[in-house]
Image 1: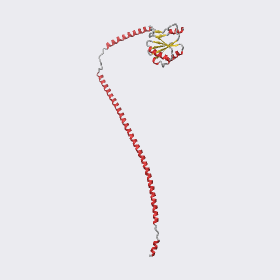
Image 2 (image 1 turned 90 degrees about the vertical axis):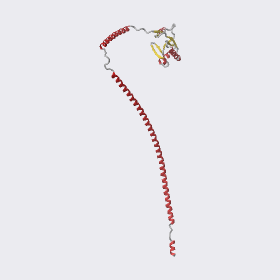
Image 3 (image 1 turned 120 degrees about the horizontal axis):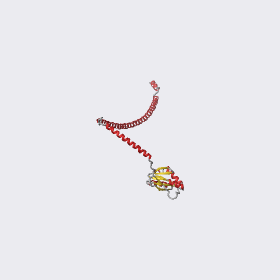
Image 4 (image 1 turned 135 degrees about the vertical axis):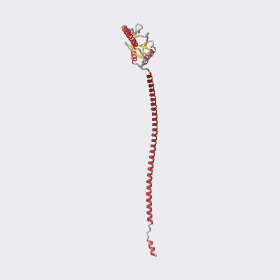
Amino acid sequence: MGRRNKDAGEDISLFPFLSVLACVIGTLAMVIAMIAVQSLDNDTVDQAIEYEKKAKELEQGNQELAKLREELKKKEAELKSERSEEQRSLENAKKRLAELLAKLEKTEQEMAKISVEGPKVDVAAQNEEIAKMEEELKSRREKIAQLTAQLKDRKEPKEAEVSIVPGGSGIGFTPTFVECDDGRIVIHDGGKTTPVRTAELNTNPDFAKVLEEVKSDAQGTLVFLIRDDGLSTYNTARNFANSKGVKNGKLPVIGNGRIDLSYFKKQAKNS
């Protein structure tokens, strides 16, 4: 009895060691589990972000695709409209061609009804009539030749002239003559004449040159020669000359002949 108690007192208890080992194993298991869970959560978040990104790209792609489909529908509608217009034009052209062909056929039918032989003609009578006409034509040609020769021998009548005569014993100024008729003026510069339309007086370089020359000459005077139909032209030209400070006067022209300024030239030489 006493020996059995001695053996029982010498046994070693393993419970504390196993408890510590179990705790260590549990702790390691928890750490591994936490690391695994954390790693799993990061992957999930990345996947979620990537999913959202792809979803947005897909949505944008769908929108662009819808837009392209809409544009395609519009283009198809436009093409259909253009084709319809071209089709109508083609149909109108075909219709017009058919009308022209029908008209041509009708004309050919009407021409076919006309007799090819036509009315009978008296050839002998026609030849006789032609001979008479040729004889008369020959006679008239001879008459025309005679009249032409007579016209060449005759002298052409001298063109009517209108002489401009200065008054008094002398001129006392240097005149520059400008003729005024309907719708224009005519600048007389020696033996040269330069026409200028009334509407171009303020821009014409020839008229501007004449005004400048008269203005620069102390004795210079612009003399307007007024025809029967040139009063309106004279008023326009005079007003323009006055605006440029050019001394001017006027003389009426009686008749429609060519203006003769020889008397003024003689008077200028004598003075």
